[in-house]
Structure formats: structure tokens, C-alpha cells
Image (cartoon, rainbow, N blue to C red; front, side, top):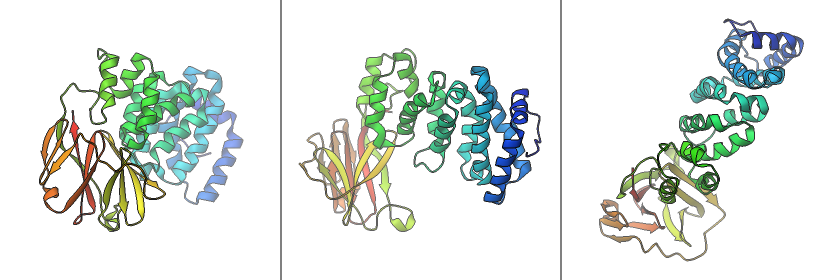
Length: 330
């Protein structure tokens, strides 16, 4: 077994000793497969990252120490052996800061909980630190991997996965008042109905009491040669009140809100009513929405636009980027 460079707790020491032969075999197999599993780094990882997680889990369910240790050990072999803590800096925070706060869930469903937290960080498109922040707020309410999955949808949405907005809102509506406030970081005194009305507007930051103001919110897209999704300047179109983006014969549904942007591929040109929302009027160089006017010079340069109930998106034949305008309260 890999040597430990730091002192570990009695719980981890005992769990490792009781499963020494099996864990040693796991280590040898992983070292052969991965080719570069440093025993010193692995020992430090067990002491610094694994030990606090196991301590929290055994405080919740002392009889689960052996199972939790096996799950953490196997996951650790992959993560340390593949140097994923170096590749994904937020993974370090997830294991050191977050998983010890999820002790009851780790104890109850170790594989599901450890796997869900790790997978949320590795390879996802949203902001992992924002995801961790939301789960930390909800940690006292999370007792199993099933709870974590529901919380993960709420966290992923607030971390930038705008396409999860409807699913997250359904989960939020089912929460008790205290958990609902925790989920969006609202103060304890905020009325649930007021908070719900803010969430009805995708551009209202739920933690603030403010009037919306029409403004340029963000620019999205970009040329594929510089990491963007588009080969050519894209066009925009509304279809039955839903925004879509096209680049030649490729089409995406465009999801937008205060937390982020998602482009989700669709199989072809969307059908339906292509009328823009009557809440928006556009003249050369100006856009007017429910929350007032905004200057928009792109419209003076052969710009085209499409809108839904809450957002206006402008495309230009001279740019691979789209400009988003909305009435934002923040």
C-alpha cells in the first residue's frame, strides 16, 4: 500500500488495515494500468483529501467505514493516477471542501455521492466553483445520492447550464420554504411568493430586489477557429416563441438566463410561428423592451434579430458573435 506522508485518523488507519491485502492489489493493478501512479502523492492524497471525507461519513454511520473507504480508494486511484486534480483545479475544492460536508450522503450512498460530485467537476461545461457554492448551501439538506442529484440540477443551472432552467424550476417549486431560499442563496426573510416571482423572469437575479433595466447582457458564440461554435456568421430565428440559431445547415436551440447560455443542437430548421415577441421593438441603433431602451449599434450595420418574451438576440453578417439584450435586474 502507498506510504502515508502525513498522520491519518484512527478511522482511516483501521479501515486501511482491515482491507490491506485487497487494497494493495487494487493499487498494484492501477499502477500497472496507469503507468505513473506515484506512491508518495497517493499517500498524501489519502491523508489530505480522503481522511476528512471518511471521518465525516463515519460520524454519520460508523458501520459504513469499510465500504466508504473502498469507494474513496478506488476513485482516488483513477483521479490521482490520471492527474485529474492537476487538470481540474476545482476537483481539489470538491474533495477537500465539499465532500466532507456531505458526510451523511457519502455514508448512505458512497459510490453515487462521490461519483456525482466528481463527475460534476470533470468535463462539464458550467462553472464548477459556482456549482460547488450551491451544493455547499444545500449540504445540510442532502442525505443521499438521490438528494444530491436533485440539488445538482439546481446547482448546474445556476452554474451556467441554462438549458436546465425548466427542470431546476420544477425541483425548486417542490422544495420547502427554507430549502428553496438556500437553493438560490436568498435571505431567510424573503417571502417565498416574492422569490418565485423573481424566478419567473429569467433575467432577475433572485437574491436582489431591483427594477429591471434593458441593456446588452452578453455576447455569445464566436468563430470555430478560435474555439467558438460557428463556421460562418450565424443567423437567429424565433419559432413558436423559442429562440434558435443557425450556421449554414446546423441549428441550435438557444437557452438564456441570468446564470448562463446554452446552445443545444436540434436536428434541423425549427417549424412553427416565426413571429418575434411583441414586447420588443427595434429601430436602427435602438432596441426597446419591457424595461426600457438600449443603444445597439449592431443594428446599424446590417443586423438581424429575433426575440422571445424576455430576450432579444442580434446577429450581424460581419461577426461570428451574437449580442443578447434583456431587461436585467441585478
